Image (cartoon, rainbow, N blue to C red; front, side, top):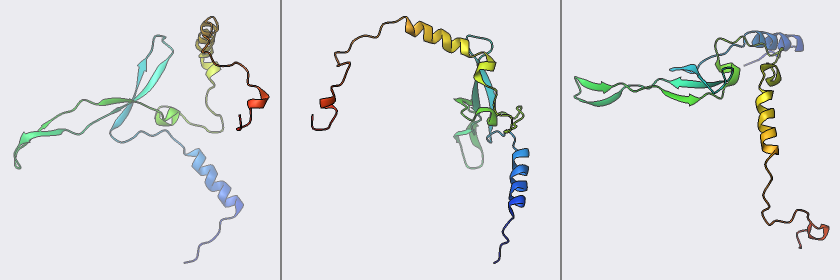
Length: 135
């Protein structure tokens, strides 16, 4: 079996076609939903997984099934899991700062800065003589 090696130009064309056709896809038997937080502009992506019916009785000829509610799970796929988002890897993702999430981070930092750190009884400095394993 002989395989022809692609030239650099052909490899680049193949890679370019792959990048141009990237699209968000969903997992089978699931759909993306969003849970809204305390602020209107924050949406947490979740994946709602549809479950198969459960056999609860009956016989071989007439089985009885019970439907199961879909299970929501946190969706870690980012924008690639959203079929409504146009993906262009050359443009990159929208930065967090442009979405306005920096004010939440800043508010958390300033709230934490106001609290003193309790002392735990551990030394705050390490003597250079104890830096070796022989100490």
